[in-house]
Length: 139
Image (cartoon, rainbow, N blue to C red; front, side):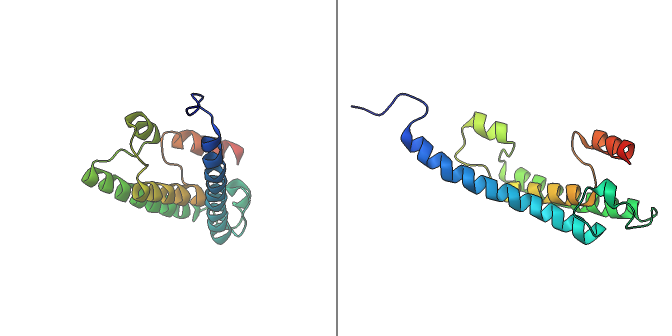
């Protein structure tokens, strides 16, 4: 009897379980680094809007701006690598192009950009303006 024609077979299942487990650990580490940055900057790992009393209001633009500059640096470095290597890093493009793997170096710098942005309270990306607006409304 030949291999199963079903999309889900035992081999796929035995590969998917450890991959999912490792992905969950990476996600927990990502959240942990964000909480560490929040704790270092704001003295609390709570929501940033709850930590506003830690610094005077004059320093908030500097803190958030510094996080945005750091995030922008990481993002710009990732884009430079992408342009030099002419690789696709958008995950949907990688899947559609059926590439062997997601480029790890640019993905790492994009993740560092997200950590710096989220951890400092900066809002970048497509939804950045809405995040800033909602944060102000919540405060």
